[in-house]
Amino acid sequence: MSWNFFLYFSIFVALLIYIRKKYKWILVFSVIMALVCIGIHIFKPEIHHIIMVPALQSPWFVPHVMVYMLAYAILGVAAVTAIYLLFFRKRDILNREVELCDNLIYTGVAFLTLGMLFGAFWAKEAWGHYWSWDPKERWAAATWLAYLVYIHFRLQEPAKYRTALTLMLLAFLALQICWYGINWLPTAGNSIHTYY
Figure 1 (cartoon, helix red, strand yellow):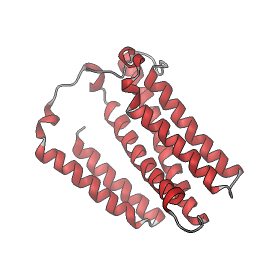
Figure 2 (figure 1 turned 90 degrees about the vertical axis):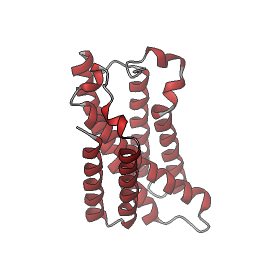
Figure 3 (figure 1 turned 180 degrees about the vertical axis):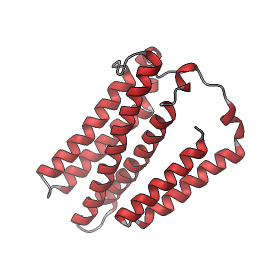
Figure 4 (figure 1 turned 45 degrees about the vertical axis):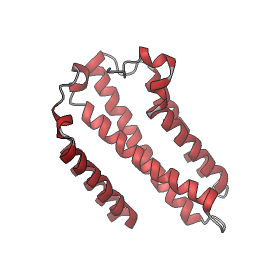
């Protein structure tokens, strides 16, 4: 599978979200992401011809990464919306605005869950076990649980918007540690997710 497949898949998912939820901004977002992918393809074509280590040659690798990137993008949009509502909004937060965040979180967590499942299948094929409690996997589980805390809080306390949005931002912080921060932890050198 190539990055072209990722481009077409992301456009397809964006269209599905637009048809289902009628969020016009998703079309703009998907066009920007498509332009980024096209730009990478045009200006850095050599990255498509790199021979990867055997663990990355699994057919589960591309779906795992692709679904995670989609989840991260959707959860990122939810976090930006939460930041706007918490810190830059001059009037009271409306229920429909928090429901927008909820819908983004539901979609993002669904893709996060799929990404974890695809990662487990990939791990089984590459290393012989579904889960190893490697640092990256521990933070992936912590991130997933943090978003579940947000979802459960919203179901139990639907009127506490500010607390819910703060929980969402904490979950997004966990996601950032999982995505970027884990590489700088002392245990990252022992990770099966380190390929350099």
